Length: 67
Image (cartoon, rainbow, N blue to C red; front, side, top):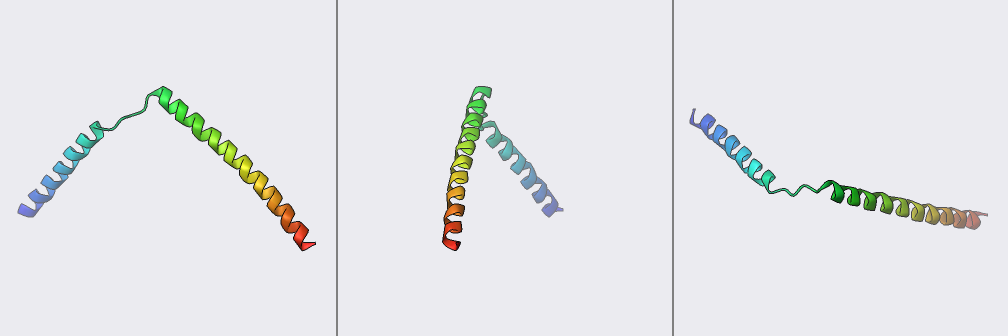
């Protein structure tokens, strides 16, 4: 019975500590979220274009070597 009480106390303490830590979390404002989203989408587009160009020239280079 003591082990059960110990497990229950550990569970209660875990949730108390988790709730305390959750209260410390800084949630971004809608403006910050929009700015971060724009940065991520912009960088994704730039990187996909860069990788597309590199891939295009890599394929052309390999094709020239194999001919």
